[in-house]
Length: 115
Figure 1 (cartoon, one colour):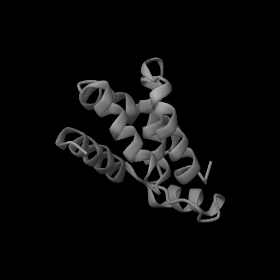
Figure 2 (cartoon, one colour):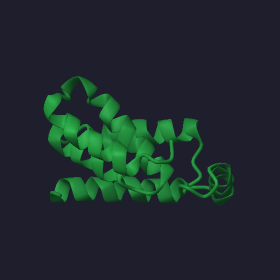
Figure 3 (cartoon, rainbow, N blue to C red):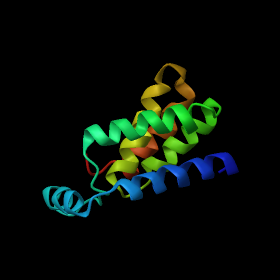
Figure 4 (cartoon, rainbow, N blue to C red):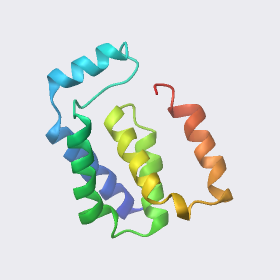
């Protein structure tokens, strides 16, 4: 993972940790029967955080670096991190091609067990 990608993933994780709510996290974990961990960020706030992160950090990176960050976040055991990974992929969906299918398949098979 490049320094730019590593820095981005760290910044995203720090932002999510800083905005988490333990009470909301506990409710999510209980609902999902402790299969996945949560920061406890509600969807509207998560969407708002993503918009800010995208405008100020993610958009500046090359597409390949954005995708690497998304893949790394998908590998997380924390729901909101996976969600941000999904949002990054959605922003880049028109740029994805056949060459990305094997990596996406691997992510789905090995890291999307909780949706």
